[in-house]
Image 1 (cartoon, helix red, strand yellow):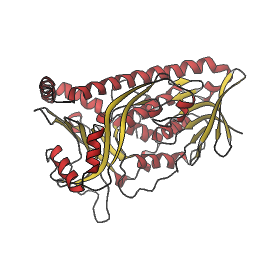
Image 2: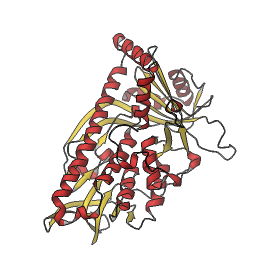
Image 3: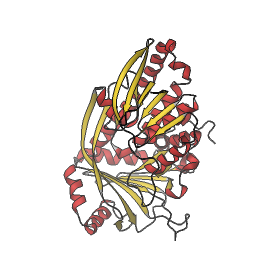
Image 4: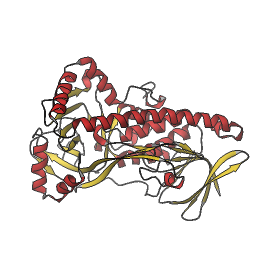
Length: 420
């Protein structure tokens, strides 16, 4: 039997971030994931994330930022958001906060590879990839609760604490029958990579269509014949719409799709060309009622999922990880005589992170409702709202800070202090 302080089920970006932070705090950590370890990056990945300044701070402090493939991520310095059916438009620029960028668009596997590079050489971390967990049982040992899991190959692992970071369809959550709140957004998201005629100018764009939002996220994928400082013309798209419309978009010929997305974006970047396959997935709001349950802590998509229209998903999960790292300061908390204190600290984590998740879930639901459909009154509100915001430096300043993730009750890892 293998014994460890903390086992993290889920070796994605959130789980690995938690592993690095907890290991730095002195915990012995094991990470288990059914997927393979390092992913070779060739063609542009379809799943990308808009990494906020707060998330960049986390990565820099944990040491994986320097391990990112720098030829495959794009800083974005501006944001442009407009409503297709009204006169409303708002634009942000990093320079308005005297910053060099608002964030970065990075392929998820690029992030994961960088975290694995650091975790694989950390003395307090064991990585088990290509490993599936088949059973989970709670045990009481000297009045301390422990969790016993068994891998598919029969290996038993006993942990003082289990972290579930195994995604939206969390196996751990199902095993514990954790109560959930669900809400179908009635949207699917279509993701793909496109090439634009005009350079994206390091600007993240989003247009609110009658059917749902369409985001164009600037990419930087250096090619052999292309200098890295040359203007870039590749973008990742996330097109959220009804399941029927998304299926229509997938069934279109490439030329039909090119025409459709060029028209949807008002040709702001000229004619657009599809350069990848089109993949879609359903969008559902999920929210775990219990984030701490029977010696198990939930984080990331295992605890909450949210509409991608604000690009918050990955960042919220990383803040979950950084918050748990701050709450669990020392391995002494896992001693049998510290059970009450550990429970208190985990409840603090739960209250802290649940409150923020609830706030953003409600905000996304409100935005989706406001920008949906063609109600004339809503169009008027949207138009004037965006116009007034765009002409109010104080309000824009607050929104830019929110977009950068540098406001609110941030964990220490996410703050600018001591970032190198």
